[in-house]
Length: 227
Image 1 (cartoon, rainbow, N blue to C red):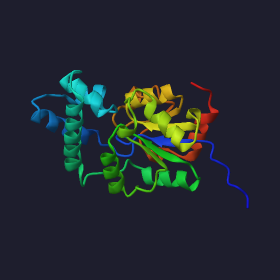
Image 2: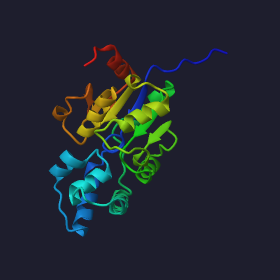
Image 3: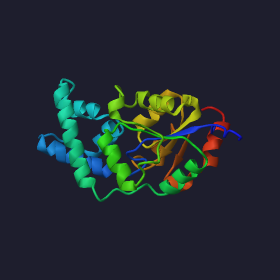
Image 4: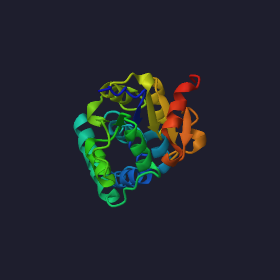
């Protein structure tokens, strides 16, 4: 029996802002949380300084770097519980996601999620989208020590997939995530949900949603000259 060859590249997806366009729901959750804690954060502050990073980084930004680990953990779980409560029933996949994932899976492409979110959020989103069995690897916040823009989350995903970093394509919406992907040495497709197209110039390619994506498009990323 002829052995099937390993696909030439793997695909790594961030979750928030990529599989789902949920910026506004995280913002609402942080606003709710900050109101309870008598803190304040604006949408612009959240977009530029927080979204795409880890909750530890977010909370240090809000409370200051002296916050202790016990409070970090407690506040993180509190905020995410708020998020899941208000987002429940509103989870919608970014346009074209299901067809694109099916195309990739049909071709034998290995798929991963690499996210700064906690596993409870990952399971919440994947269950809502009925995608629990779609991804070969999931790397969540509990599996890394450094948040984006550090490349740790993407490098761990590539190792678990069995691919070299230069053999991976990352789908990212945040500026921190794009920086992390570049530092990992991977190809990056920017998804213009959280940020406008013009803000994602560091990505190798930018799309508005997954209806613009195909395996051929990804293959072309590897045939173009390194940027």
